[in-house]
Length: 589
Image 1 (cartoon, helix red, strand yellow):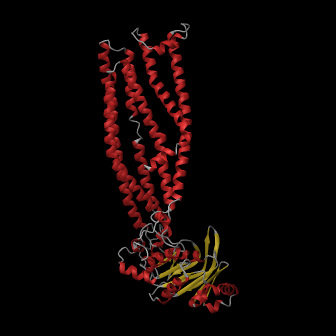
Image 2 (cartoon, rainbow, N blue to C red):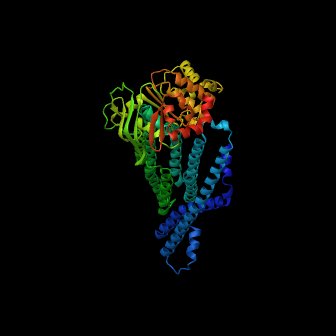
Image 3 (cartoon, rainbow, N blue to C red):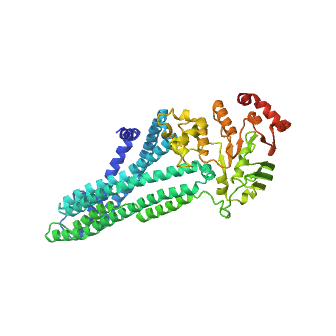
């Protein structure tokens, strides 16, 4: 009821235009049904049949017999058609102004309402989702009012005027049309009841499909790094097949409805002709009346058959089905690589004379260093120095020149999925799904138990945060984890990564938003963890450097490798370290 009031109030600035629209609609539809009356009068006069129409006769009398009968009727028809054209043009302009004003007002009201929602209202759904859904809904309502509602209003007016004219001629002439319209209305009610559950199912499936699509593309790097493309593609395909089946059922139902209505429209004409012939033979009606009856019946019944082109709609569904499936084929990066069965046993990472380009620009050049298995390595450098690009190249996101090897295999020659089975890259941004905390943790390992989740949560100082939520691990975090703070998001991502630890673990500034106390605990836990994995930590916190045996310093497109003591001899490293010494290093020490 509130929304209905909102819709009504959105027309408040267009009241006068609405009145003009209704007046023009009445005039337009009345004149449309009056043209057959003029033609009926014309036919009956030519056939010397008894006919009477005061309006037409008055118009003829205006010419005082200066013009013959036929030109006068032609002039009358031209005048009526001219008024129809002018009324149609003015009504179109008026309707456009009404719709524009209505759409603006309704969107403004809904947007203002969204802005006034409490923060808790955003927990289950993000602001962008709310805005997007409301925009789609407004567009649907506007389209209905602009097209369907106007169309229905025109049909009602035509039926009223047509039946009125037929009753004036002979009330029996309208009986067949009334029966045909009644059957069409009954069939339309049947069609509505049958199609509604199909439409509801299709809307639900489409929402699920586009939500999954949005989730997958919002988290595309996470999907690629963890080789979830095929799994999600299959899941998306299943949803899309169900959506396709719903669309197909709708097409079949539309076909039956259109066939039945079309047959009713076709068979009514001979029945009308038989009845009219009988009435004519009895002297109740004229030949012109037969023409009017058939014209009105066809005009009214055919108005009900103006549905969307079913074949075009079916083809659209097929095109959408194929296009959306193709969208989940994220990349063809392994198209020419056949070594899917190679197992990486030696996880030594070797950069030799390597250069990395992004958009034809050299970001890093002449890289020479080695990271041995099970080492704990820190990579530091200023913002934009290329730290993240360095390790994204390692997992196949960027091309390179020179040599970058994992064990004895060149990265460019390895299957990227296989590389990512051995490397876990936790990116700087927290990629989360609009699900519960537990569901986000279980994405990589669905069978992980709650005790194991709690153990990992304690390891990453997150369990105490989770139990503060009313639903604990079953708390829905909303789009991009809106329920969580940035630090909580990063800890959740760390937990998820360690449900499926890999031989090489890369942390790309994965602790930047975590508070210093929890950061210290987590880093201590990771430094003490002996899980036979290489740990590479990218960070701006150069104050942590003394705690690592190997540091790679990125500066001016170059990489310098060594211990903290060795790198202190480099003036650029020393300068950066001295500036940050008192920020975190003292607290961490």
